[in-house]
Length: 193
Figure 1 (tube, helix red, strand yellow):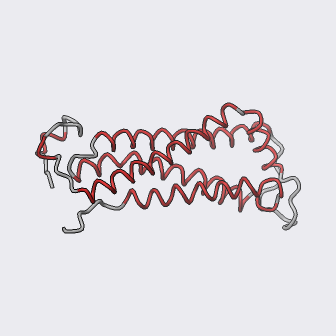
Figure 2: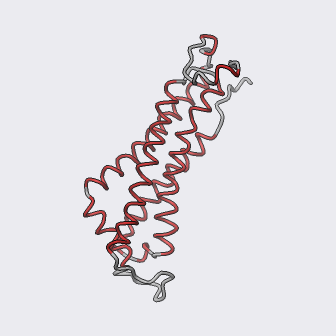
Figure 3: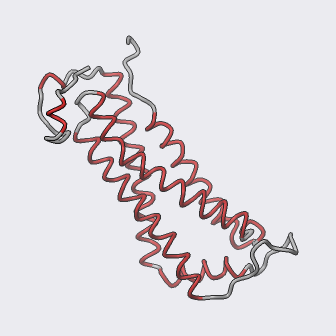
């Protein structure tokens, strides 16, 4: 592995030390896959961010409908009573949209950094993965914490026929993001090491 002197760290991770360009093919395959998966998570979050901004009124109505707990069969007693506040619906939608925007921006920043240093040493590439990992983690928090835990369990979204598809979509997005986060966390090692 190419270990750069400590003084190099302050010049940025994009230095052009040619001795660092001898990354084995098996490692490069994983680096390309990690970059592509981080791109997928970044685009997923960024595109939902854009969709929600472009369709603000519809998104707001969906959040308001969720909070109102209309059409919920199943449990008669709810941990959180129905909420009919347009202001609270706006706050919840802002949290969702902001989370998606942050997740997309972090993951796409990580993609750029990973691509830029893909042929450099392990430590440099691991450092570049940081933003992609943070982006995937933020996406997990949006689609798992906000939708599954708070929406699905606290607001009981799954008991409203009109919200089942939203809950299922959020579950898929959370799983994709979490699997990407796990893969990004793994080191790229040469099988012969």
